[in-house]
Amino acid sequence: MMDHALTDDVIGASHLQHRSVRSEAIEDYAIHSIHLSSESIISSKLALESVQPSHLSFNPVQGIPDTPLLQQFGYIPFTFPDEHEAIEITVPLQTSYQDEHYVVVASCSDPVFQAGIRKRQHEEVAIGITRPAGTLISEGWLYWISIGRMET
Image (tube, rainbow, N blue to C red; front, side, top):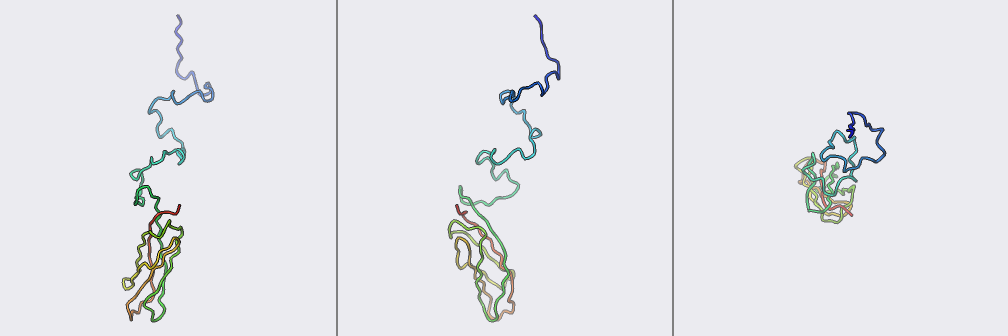
């Protein structure tokens, strides 16, 4: 009986038929990160819910479970007309919210000014700014941040 043994490096890639190596021929845990080409893992290859907050290098917006959230922010300059103690600024939102039940926080660049939410709508929020009577400061910046349910 003849013993037929192949020596090392006898069979090369050119000897393999196209699609002849299937997943069952690959040993478990044989594929390592070095075997993956850049950008080979794309979103369509990720199982739903496979990426969790613990996998991220940043802290994502968290809120109501199973609800897609949207966070927006910005700043707007303002000027009080002479003798006025209150103004209202309408902030257009870049992306609309699902409803008016989103959270808005507003502050001003100088503590002499007070900001408060007057009205929330899907696509904009009205913020009132007041200043004490006789205040000489008439200009500042309105800073705001909002978070709520994304419009579906």
